[in-house]
Length: 609
Figure (tube, rainbow, N blue to C red):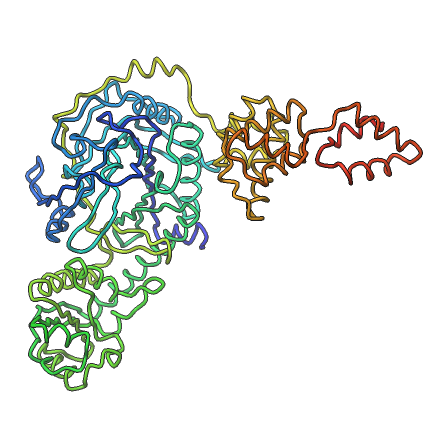
């Protein structure tokens, strides 16, 4: 990673969009359960979507791009988690009051102003993930902020909206979605593009994520929270990177995106200095009638076509690396693949690996009227696909002369890079929702009173309870904090003992292969009740946990089978009296070596004193 000064000189701009599912019983605009089905679909429907003009008479560029793919969308429906509202066959019901209250709590906790009335809007969805081709969204907070490491990060808007459908299968010709996720309440938190470095972006995302967890009103687990990031540098364009689910890799993905944009700007300057231009595609099928290049020959022998295009002044730049395992040629290929082709062949590659003959390469160059310093691109596929793919490849090659295209890209967590998804959406994708009524905010705000989530107040409270700064800070950031709070509240156990078991002992046991995730909260609570009543010792807790109990009765069985009942004080005193001739350390060592799991060390120490 680079210094803040490095990113400042690049003109780095970065803002976050954090999406978090809310933990409500029902969906946002219907009474279906707000959870994932986990069972088989009972029915499926198929739909296609086409681009139409919005209320301003303009067709959004990203919508038009998706429409050109002509993909079929298949939606799986489930018994308890989908209904006619999800299928866009029935108007939305009233806004979920529980979701509204949670969104207002989060907005107030982020110092936002609250509108008097929540106005539902429709936001065009271009990838088919919504059966209606739009998502309902409502502004529920504005002009907020959060402090991160002493710096104020402005939050201009917070939205309450519907979650999209989950992708179950994907190809260039069709996408399969699970509609059980569609309509689950979701909150979107946007920051201003004032984040100074990729590392700060990670810290901001972590701080907002912490605040969301501390509400106790958000869903947990993979996919329940995701970060989108908007990134640009001087001389470039705004790029939206979607789907950063793993917080640990946020900074690395942003850093690689910055490097990609910087390299594209370098390539653009070089292309302009060479007077680069992109020619018109030509059909070259006849050149390859008897080719030994299998990747092309397979297409030609099936009656398909080969098209090529001359890229004047591009020589050596298609193979220029712009990210790990990514080159300018890869970017052009990503565009072409939108037309359901396998990719492109370009002249900066090792053409011998394709088994293209020198004669074929010469004929291609002649047919495309190539000169010194030029490159070419070849695509072989069914004619219709081939023409579409070549048009997309030509479009991306022309963009390379201009610099960084404004795009929506997807995060690749494996390579920590980004891949092209579609052009970035414009403002014409938003329009009023005519089927859902507005909702006033006065009543839910009155019900909430002055309650907000104050991270610093919670941090101080934990330190006061646990009396250990390191454990308290770990607990603040731990996903198991709700479990800690529940156990302490219901058992009255020493908070430090509970915290050390959950944070340290669980981790130690997990490393030893114990399935600590299977230990139920109910069983853990019962164990600590036994401890508070002095039925078991602290060391006995660890021994019980090793067997990962799921139910209360399992705890009792383990205590009985393993003989873990704590020895009463009278019996302990009797043991001490029997060893009266020995010194204090000898007595302690002898008793604890034989009975350490059923004797409390502090009680023995006090007795010996």
